Length: 199
DNA sequence: CTAACGATTCGCT
DNA sequence: GCGAATCGTTAGT
Image (cartoon, rainbow, N blue to C red; front, top):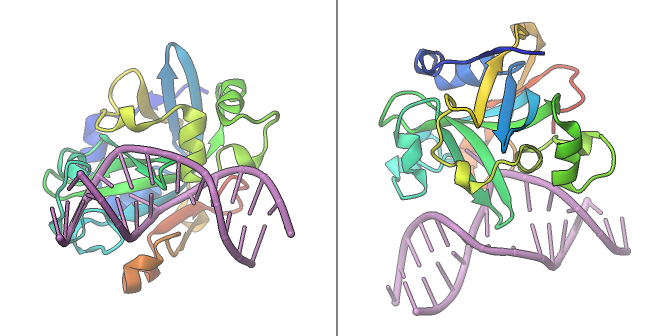
C-alpha cells in the first residue's frame, strides 16, 4: 500500500479540528535506519492552544518544551509523559497559534515484526498500537523526533486514498485530562467507527 | 537547586 | 479495577 506523502501545504491549509478528522485513515510512517514501520491513523485528539486548558500552551505558556507548537504546522511535537511514554503530536495552525493533534492509535501496516520487537510482544494484537504511548514505541518515535518536520525521509504521513466519511467518524471526550475541568468535556477526540484498533 | 507532576501503561488482584 | 513505575519539565525557593 504505497501512498503520497502529504506536503507542507496540506498542513498549512487546514484548521486543527479538521486536521484531526481528515488525517484519520491516512498512514503514519517512520523510516529508521532504512527500516520502515507504519500504520493507519484511527484515533486522534485536538488540542486547541491558548484557550484550551488541556493544552500545554494554555494561557500562551511558551516554554522550551512547547516552543515547537508555536512554530509552523506539519512538525512533530513529541514529549515524555509519566517519565516513560513518548506522545506524538502533529503541530497545526499558523505560527504563534500553538495547536496540535495528538495521534492516539494506529492500525499496524508495515514492519509489524519490528514493531512487535520494539514493544517486546510475541504476536500481533490490539495491544501493539492502541494507545498514544504504544504506537510511539512501536514506530520507534522518541523525544529525538521532537521538532522534526513531516516532510523528511524519517517521519511522514501518506495519503493512501482511504478517506473516512464523516458518518464514520465518532466524536467524543478526550482521555486522561481530568485536570482540565470544563475543557475535559469538549468533544475533541475523534476515531473511526467500528475500528478495532482504537484505544 | 528542589519538589511536584503528568495528554499512560502494565501487572497484579 | 487499582496502584506503581519513572524522569524530563516546570515553577517556585
